Image 1 (cartoon, rainbow, N blue to C red):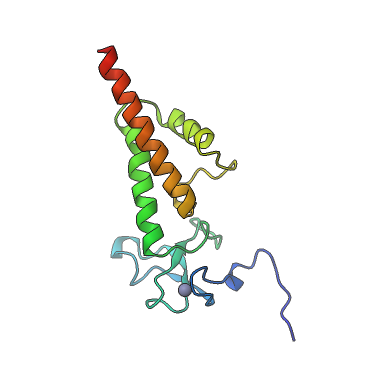
Image 2: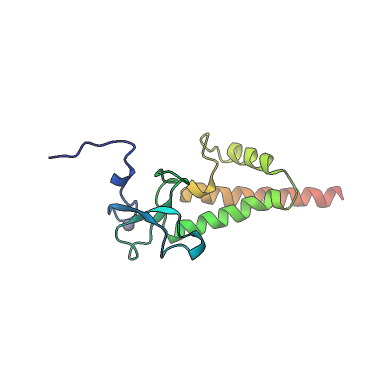
Length: 143
Ligand SMILES: [Zn+2]
């Protein structure tokens, strides 16, 4: 008998890397002690397949697709490049996010870098670096 598919049933999700089923569990043993209470969807082949995704706090809704180490590193890099735009004081955080969604044409609501896939992460890094260099240059000329 085939199970009825429910679109909001995330436990029927598959790992995008190896196709295995995913397990809903705490982050114990994956995150550091401080964050081990977070809930995750983890590839059932973990740790051979190092793919998982965090849930929105207090829900069973995953923050996007499962990510492997490569994608997680890429997301960190994207955050770093992008955050520099407002952390450096060159623009406000709000402006930076508006600029980002216009520049890489993110679908509305996709404002969390933590949910982006490889393609969008690379775009964020490339565009943020370019933009930062451009503003810095203008500042130098204006000074
Ligand atoms: Zn997997």
